[in-house]
Image (tube, rainbow, N blue to C red; front, side):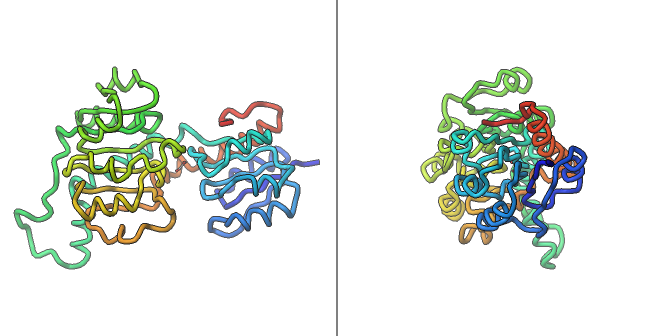
Length: 323
Ligand code: GLV
């Protein structure tokens, strides 16, 4: 009998094609929006699904595992897997996979776009033009901040942080400092990055702080009110990792009170909701969790997640197993 796979949102025909060619029966949630947990449970209860291809917007925990006892593998279409209760999955011998290593350059490029947009005040200028306010060149119109000569503080230098280091060093000759649970000799040797003894030192020294850590208990609210106070009043904060790494309400207060100069966020603590007043601040740039949104990256994420399911049922250990 064919194995059954449930895909929690349309992610392109390739996943379905790959799975059908390998004799899986595939059902896909037809609506173009994230499923609520209740909807996932209701749908999983309809069939004995052997596998689920899930998205980062799906909360996968004991309730889901209880509703779908036949499911052996959840292939998460994302590099991050903080949406899944990994410990609970492990307890039940359920395999979890992700799609790592394919979005590093895209996310690093987006990080750079945000850094430069902040220092050049590009979005403020664009808004001004669209509102018909431009009355001609003026010496003090949207005066920005130099990027050259700045110190970039990378919190986390895994796949994405290392790419940011490469671009910062090769493209801008920036000074790079970093923190990470493991020293990264490659970024040190190739890009002159210096490891800080602790996060506090990095926050005090960096002109631009960019976050590249996974969301874990230890990184939840890593950037809180106290740590924001440690940053330079001229510093910028960039987050393309996961929203809850920053205490967003504390960030709003810090931006309102000019504790730091500005921030650019691609991810949000209460996604898709924004903290009150965040979108009203002129010194913040917001993008809708699109740092990895490139055709090539999405195609590879589809391929990797479908392949994990195919490999697992062919008796192989999926290459991107996380538990
Ligand atoms: C995107 O945020 C991902 O984790 O792939």
